[in-house]
Length: 472
Image (tube, rainbow, N blue to C red; front, side, top):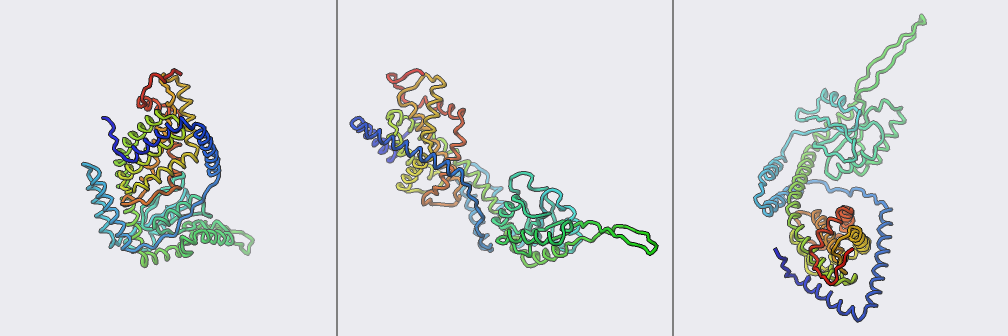
């Protein structure tokens, strides 16, 4: 099916590029100076990208606002809107499962039964602590769960429970810290149980407890960081008789978990409502994310053909107008319309001026990152090394323009997919985020095999001019 072009930005932009091409024939030196300026910008941008890669930014979680029943109800409303949007855009898609899960969440505010998960790494005493707690009179409405050993991989685990008791046997590790940060951000209440404290001398116990409390001060109350001994070491007793005989025996020690048991009883009595709200919030956000992923898949299927349409128009335009500075101008005009069309697919209502601004910023970022030069060099070398039989004067520029247009489109798709599914208006783009998306998409698409495949797809879309063709 033929491509129908009825876009004012696109038509005007390409027209301007051809006018400038005519002007170029009278003032080639100025254009050459412009190209040298562009190369300089590329060099500076490449250096800036390298310098940024050497600098690691450590992000810490921002404080979370205390949950209320109304704020959780608001999240459920957002989930409902997300499900309705999925039903509207996904033709013949069955959303009854989503609706049923949402209905169950809405009925959970008065839930009395609570789940406590005992979690931690390998051999920290989860099983023993569970057995000891089961012998305590906590509540008949409590279910104790023992998780599998955590932190075997770098992936941060997710635990379905109203309250987590995280067992440690020493100071916090980086894995502990990242896991607890995630819990804090997700309204997941936790208690730290410093188990096997009897294996340390009193001074060491105090130091470890104080270090943990200091590190978790923004996220946890000191009363939620407790030292326990679920299975204390046996006590060796030695007795000297008057007759000179020495008798030795061992005496088992009772578990020391009273402080933990008392703290759990207080939380279950005073904070059960907040524990339930936190669980509903997490489940609602998970349900919303599932709906969003399905909707993003549907929207991506609509976006990819649109990106391909614009990349081939960009290729043909740059092929017919093979001057680097003008290629960027024509591609920017095409990309402006592409931004608006992609925004419409992702329900991000953008104005004409916003589309132009976003397109211009993406172009600047590509130049700063050195992607224009890198892409052109890679494509040029592959064209020469693979003995392609069709290479005209503007072929490299045409394929490069298509490739860069595709990178821009895929970066926008990745960016829009991260936005709130219920957002009806996008005031602009976060340049920091789009910067990261461009780098991410480029890294995913820069392999020679992928670029070579793209070249073979692009060549048939270039106008064939037998007078300018040559064999490499």
